[in-house]
Image (cartoon, rainbow, N blue to C red; front, top):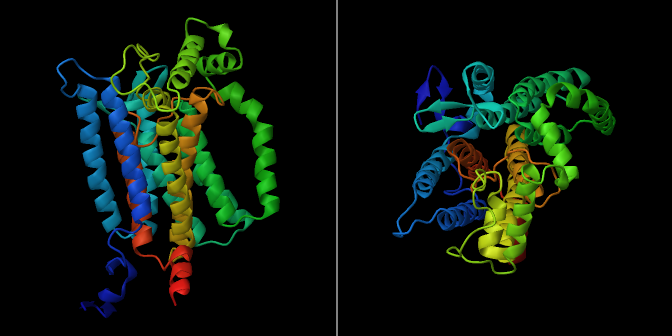
Length: 385
């Protein structure tokens, strides 16, 4: 045990070895399953005649490999170190969000990306994680008081506002859901939660008028009336419906003929679930949904059994961020929500989304590897005793 200036380093919690090698095998297995389904679906959608790998499949395979390394690294790092570094981490990514509004690349009417050669970096993916870390770190050190709530609200509004300006409504909504989950877990009083709900309802018309650009208003109009733009956005929505419906129970296979999504530039990103449904049918779609349900279950179990308050709140925030993003993507694909351009974690084509998701999975495994026995393990041990 090393001693430096009277401090026993071996006694510091962030220097101890993890209690478990993997952390939570079910969580990791669910993530691997989702990534595998996504890669198979992409291979079927971008197949080439000689049977080799398409450029998209090669890129996504590389992203998955990098994501695997990120998971291993983040699982190895003690999550409690982030409680000490939350301010510089959040400041860095808020700065990146501000910079992308000035120097970022514009695509599909939004300025969200930095272009680096043939690749792009989307700061909002990582800024959301930094925001969750910051909110969890501050909330774990403060009681649920009005002053503390105002501080946490500002910590959310600054990055959320910058993401909304890009505009990226889907990412903003996912971050808002994670922040609300953190407020519930803090725990904010019921009176405070009602005040949040009333304020949100009151400001929806103002936010719609000031922050929602024209093309997103058009998306909302087409969502309510698909016949409004039958050759544009309305056509896309109808093709997504056809793709999901044509898959049936078992799907059309990975090498069927012309897809209903053929020609849609966002088929591998915004409508990745519809692509899975067309190829693998109801069984493939349910496999993905069940895997995300397992991630939600294990994420909350990790939060419940975390050894400290910061770990509990961080696990709640990361789980909410992951699961709500997946739910928003699903809702868009089955016509329950207007198109927002939000990717399906671990399935949609894209490096920033893949690496950010891998970082969240790795952090959850880091918390799990240092946790007390979770309720399921305690119940099993009691049964055997």
